[in-house]
Length: 276
Image 1 (tube, rainbow, N blue to C red):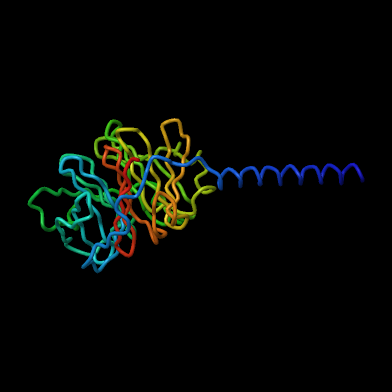
Image 2: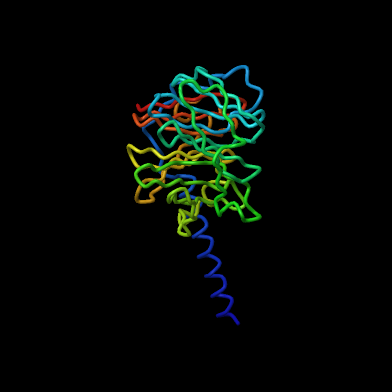
């Protein structure tokens, strides 16, 4: 009996050590250390809806963002100035936008669990979502899914990386094969992201570094995943990276291929982080 109690006690101590070690790691995690905020909480005025997604258009050298209600697409300069407001033909609960080249964008519509392909050129003032080419990724069929909350396009692989927001937090590789989407059943969930972030509100793939940036609203951080699946973290709270205040509700993230990182947050705030 005494030997059994000793084994139980030893096992309990080992579990405590493991929990403490893991807690120490996630609270003393390796940080992304090469950024400093250069635009801190710049308001984007005259918006009824909340900013939700963000993407970089390498062809126009501008940013594109979406608002959820009412559905609106914005073109932004790199200093957060609104260059254009593009209306949609109907409400669509837009949660993410991703540029894939040749004037084409993917839009994520959370309530319907679908992705729509649209075209935006220099003259576009309104987007017809009702008749856009639409896909329903297989991941969306699961009942516990909270919707596609982030999109990241890998052009050299013709692969879209998409995130399930929460319950549970998951990332999937959606393969684009002549217009057909297939769910890759070996997603990046090996990273055990739910240990590090409580939700995913946005994503971006930096083609110049092959790093995947994962944005979390609830956890107020960015997780950077390199090509070896090693993780680094970026806190979005006051005092880190020169931030004067916490980023209140980060919803969209983008990189421009030259080292700058952009975040949009509700209530319609714009942030730019530049290399030190």
